[in-house]
Amino acid sequence: MRLKNHYWFLRHGQTTWHHPDLSYPADNRTSVRLSPEGKKQIETATRILKQKKIDLIFSSDYLRTEQTAGIVSRVLKIEPIFDKKLRDVRLGRYHGRPKSEYYRDRPLKTRFQKSPKGGESWNDLKKRVARFLKETEKKHRGKNILIVGHGDPLWLLNGVMKGLSQKELLDIIRIKKEYIQKGELKKINGGD
Image 1 (cartoon, one colour):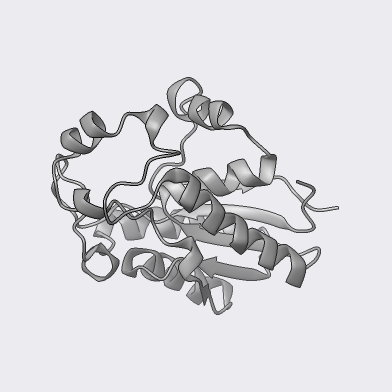
Image 2: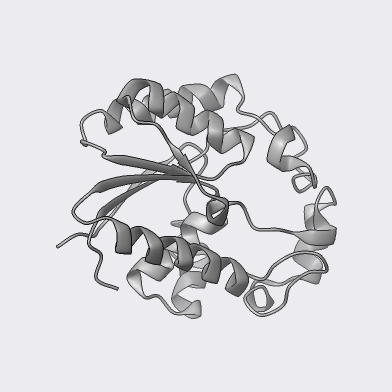
């Protein structure tokens, strides 16, 4: 896809969720917040962003991404625009359950097509972030845009922007190990 704007991705920082073996709970939209370390990660990223002449900030409306966007917003003096299409993937019945259960029941190769009960597949999520991109590209041109989000939506949005196949997207995780980390800032090429 030929992009009319320039994009930066910023994944929210480390959180207060202290259950490494459990997935986020169902109420993670409002219950999971940035930890002190996560706030420091975002402050570091913000120092870099100050040099990038960001015009717009879009963010997921989850608490941890709202906090992330808020830290950036205060420094850059740009009000973030919160968009539900940037929300994290819905895990359905797996929210708050052991990650090992999710990984056992949902191998990587099935996650694009099969939605967990009450959740969404990666293809569902990909369509959602593609709608966001289409709307943004239609409305803006030549802007430097920061997108504050979550791992899976940012990974799939990057794939939409670059026209990557499912295999190429999976290679990012399995082979290249380029999946965006918490607190990481990435420049995504784009613009005329």
